[in-house]
Amino acid sequence: MSAARREVAGRLHSAAIHLLRVARTVDGESGLSPSRLSALSVLVFGGPRTVGGLAAAEGVRSPTMTQLVNGLESDGLVRRRPASTGDGRRVVVEATPAGRRILRRAQARRLDVLAVVLTSADESDLAVLDQASTILDRLTRDHVGEATGAGPNAAATRTEPPARS
Image 1 (cartoon, rainbow, N blue to C red):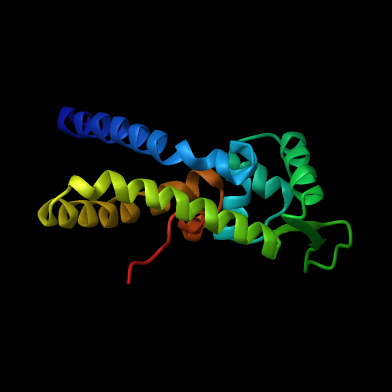
Image 2 (tube, rainbow, N blue to C red):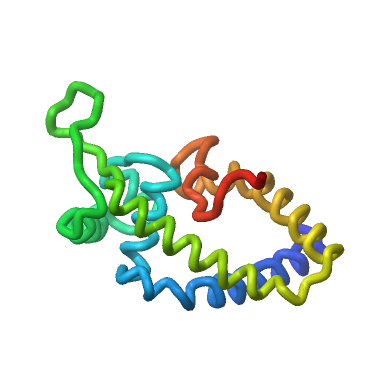
């Protein structure tokens, strides 16, 4: 890896961490722990998954994810349903309408915070940031799939809207 790439990688890493810290300051308003909110996000934006698939996407072990899913289920935010594989023992977890509403509200709060951060950006800055977000999304799409085992459509697990209108 070239020194220039590594330097840019370091600046991106630092900026991403700072941006995430600012955005998640409002996550507590959802009433969910960060781990529950994250798992719910994967289900809302990435679609139904097995507990094992959800655990892989979140980088935790299946027993840990089972506990998270049990809590989300008892809160009425997810439900288990039989998988369409014909194997009655195999189930998938999906977000309920209530879970989708909570996640969408949490996302809206984060976007509101980030919009405030962007208030001091001029139109030129906004254009550059828009272009950079498009490039980053394209560059990370395949790597997210490799990291989560979700395959080429893994970008669907992101917590931001996939398209701008």
